[in-house]
Image (cartoon, one colour):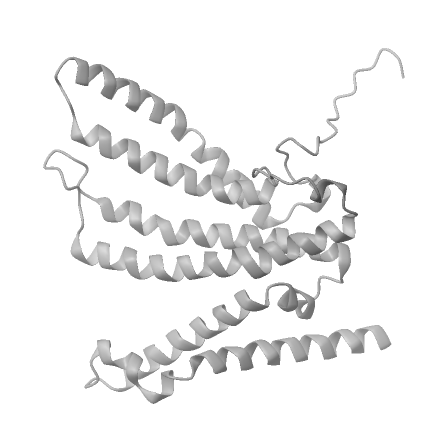
Length: 258
């Protein structure tokens, strides 16, 4: 109607965009909220950089400002990774994808997220958990006497931020999966099979590790991984995934028949 202003915004395929309101999940809102709060660190980062430049010119270099810049940048950019996944605002360099059908695009996204990205994210979250714990127990600080001396706080945040990225990737993968499938658990497990297998393997490993740790006080912690019970966690993980897949598939078939 003339005289009225259309306040709706049609998302441009080439521009960063948020998820449509009717498709938002709790994970999407969490990622966007954390990212929006973290974005306020960038003005602080710019102030820190400018201040350090001026102070260096005056011969008053402050090591803690250098550390603060790396802390802020590292934390904010890692959060931004999750935001880019959720809003699909990451850089795409392709000449084919934009001309594919919605179904073909969805298949590519499911494969990329579930079979390529998520296994990497899960491996990194697992490795960084040990890395952060080692830093915490050692009380790791700055290499400079005048730097920020609780570096382990930053490192403790890394596995949590990768978990946030895992949740973002899982939510986005499921959204694309629903374009070509039902989105039920068994289809999700196919869409993220390598990641699901590795998660199940890690779950089996840590459960058995702690069982042995708590039930055998004489066994040294560093030798628990050599125990025969833990040697086959890869296959335990596969069995868990196959059981979950089978149960979900049977329940889906029964629901269709019912």
